[in-house]
Image 1 (cartoon, one colour):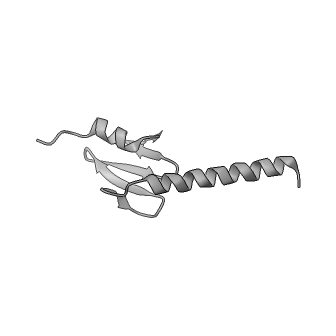
Image 2 (image 1 turned 30 degrees about the vertical axis):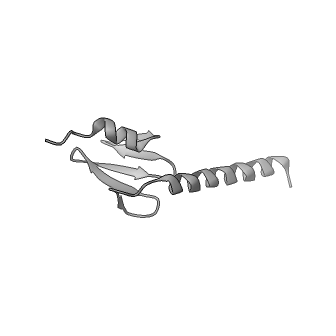
Image 3 (image 1 turned 180 degrees about the horizontal axis):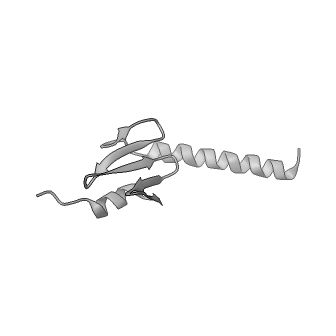
Length: 80
């Protein structure tokens, strides 16, 4: 077994574990779950797609990564 192969296998395991933890932390409240890995909801009349395992989300044709709930809080229209 090559040393480089071992490194790539360890890196692959690391990514799988990170994705699993991201899924565990994600709160499905308020989301439509299309699959375990793809969720969506409406934000200001536009669709917000979210992939919780990678913390990637798409809004108005632009892809973002990170704290989707913080993104939503900054853009939510206040109730009238």
